[in-house]
Amino acid sequence: MNDERMWGPAKIWAARLVFLAVFFFLWEKVADAKLIDPILIGKPTGIVQFLWQEVFVTQSLLKDFYWSMAGTVLAFLMGSVAGILVGMLFVTSPTTEAVFNPIFTALNAMPRIALAPLFIIWFGLGLGSKVAVGFSLTFFIVLTSTVAGGRGVNPDHITLARTLGASESQIFRKFVLPSAVPVIFNGLRLGLVFALLGVIGSEILASENGLGQTLSVLAASFKTNGVFAIIFLLSMIGVAISWGMTSLENRLLRWR
Amino acid sequence: MNMAMQPAPAKSGAGTVTKPAPGSVIFDKVSVVFEQANLTAVSDFTLHVAPGEFVSIVGPSGCGKTTLLNFAAGLLPAGAGRGTMLVNGKPPSTGTHDLAYMLARDALAPWRTALGNAELGAEVRGVPAEKRRARALDLLDKVGLKGFENAYPKALSQGMRQRVALARTFSLDAPILLMDEPFGALDAQTKLQLEDVLLSLWQREQRTVLFITHDLSEAVSMSDRVIVMSARPGRIIADVPITLGRPRSVRALQKDHDYHELYSQVWTKLEEGLSQ
Image 1 (cartoon, rainbow over the protein chains, first blue to last red):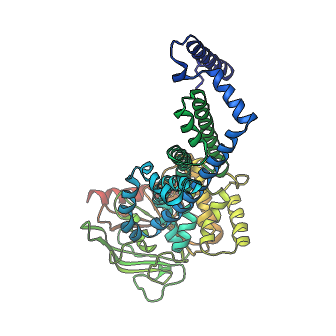
Image 2 (image 1 turned 135 degrees about the vertical axis):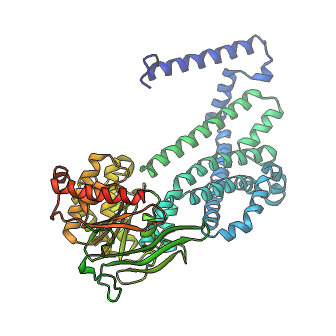
Image 3 (image 1 turned 120 degrees about the vertical axis):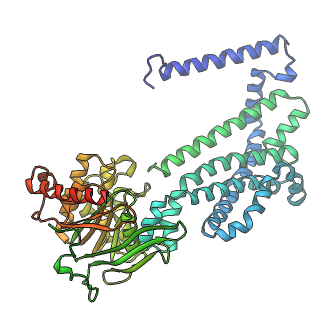
């Protein structure tokens, strides 16, 4: 890392900004000159204008943002709580796992977005159907990581626990659970990203509101600047999610 | 000198299993057979460890040393251990409070601080929080880790981690300590330091120690008796009393003439056993 050929952080940031500036400048020029039809690629200044208008003036995107986030958070919370509980049940009761594991594997193999129309029939065009799709993704991811984490306990810890005379519940609370936390955390991080994916995907299919619904309306009317603006917002949300999870992890898992 | 078949020292009562004293460990004609693997790990092993005695078992890898400790700790599968095995006068049972087991690897919980790890054993055994904390703090001090109470294992060197494991082991009230090559992975200097730490802890309380090692100098410098085992199936080929005085300093012994004399005696026994 101390390679002298490696630039310092300030220089790297500068280079990054220069690259982005050149990229957006060229994009703007290509669109202006109609080298590629702006209907296909939009235009950076148009995208900024759209964002300004819809976020700060009419605030219609903010409302969509809140709806999508509410769906994502609900799907994530329900999916991860259920995933952790069922995962712990599997870890503590191998019989239960033997019975249900193949069934869950089959359920998990279904392309979840194909279930979205069914969820829309069941739960309507509001929050319910989006939460259902997000939940169906998050649950299995968190379940898998919880089982993996629970299985990954150090055999030396189990030997030590047995020689100490630990009860099954002590072994679980003092050894299995804490050693599973980092692996479960990886599942939670992925689960949150997939909750967002499920909610947005379900909104694109059919919904009354949300960023995904607005995205599909804009795309259907060839408002490319708007489509790019929402994609930009979504990627910002994704970045914020992984940054938030990382800082939470660093605080909770200081021992690593 | 005929040490090969010498029975246990007089204080443990040679050969009889009539009335075991508290803190004693008795193996009487013990064999361990793993039927699934069709393997006889130990055969006809008789050893009486008196209360407060520090006994080391040395022998080549795979001679069943660890298996003997596992038998005493109640960790063997049912039916594998045969013969009479008495720990503190009772047949072995998993998790008995009569003994504390220290493994070859430190087995520290990485999510607990040094203090949390030192307390762990007593915590599992239901010692009240204040009492076990005071005890753990005292022991961390004794093993030379004052100031590291709140450090996580990742920040500790291997030697320091093994010191924490020593504190965890000694924080238990068990009269018998089983130690399975606890210093095997340490470098020579750190090993000498930790051997002295172990001796000073043991000297205070005089608990029974059954110490497994393949390091002859470690066995001779710390023990009251050294048991030499043959290759598998392990049997006793020598039982050598170590007549060096107490308290000892392992580091000072390195230049001691009597120590080297005893060392070469045990070494001869070991060589004879291996060439048989």
